Length: 128
Image (cartoon, rainbow, N blue to C red; front, side, top):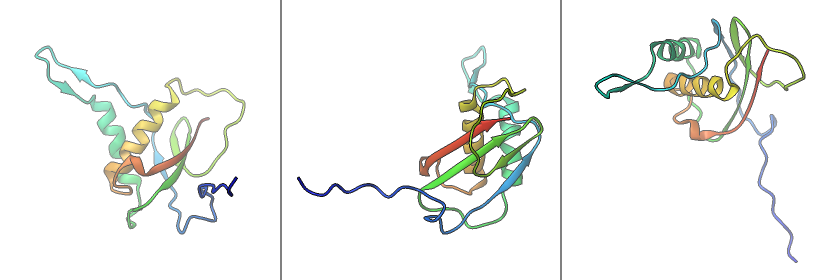
């Protein structure tokens, strides 16, 4: 048997750069698309407004052009975007964490920090 080659894992040493920022305001889960009585599909106003908070919080830096790893820490009145680990505790936030993540990634993409959320190779997220 030949030597197996393992894929390079993403670590903080592998990263050439890191961007951290805080999004002020209560975290909002991504809302489901809605439909008018005439059949037109639209994004809820709350979702659009929440994505705009990410757009305004992202610092003016060069976008990442390769794979990225993102860590999100959702607090009751702000969101920290930084590496963190999950623990065993209760949270006052009621939404599903995947919907919070979807909105955060869409907001970061909309701000231009990443071209597409397909670039994200790892997500660590926690509700506090």
